[in-house]
Image (cartoon, rainbow, N blue to C red):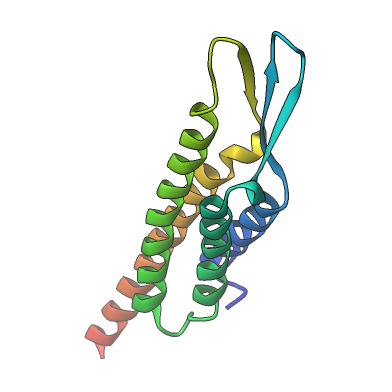
Length: 140
């Protein structure tokens, strides 16, 4: 389990999504009054729930290393959720922007994109393992 590269990818996804759950995702400054508004992941229930789910699903799939097809399906589902999470994060921040505010996205708001890339890499490596096992069964 540990020696497989896709396990490392999945573990990094778990770590990134866990960090995202407890950090700020953006900061907006009202230009007229100078007030700062900090947007956290936990402020929005939908974003917090999706972030928790996108950290839980890879944690489950990491231990499904003997069932590669099921592990691949879990990661595909997680990739779809990561795309939805990134869309909700962008919508959540952009919906509060007007001409009187200046907003800055934190680097943590890109964690779903990085996690998506790592999840796709894990899917590719799981598929390679499955094809290798199938070819070995064919030779017997």
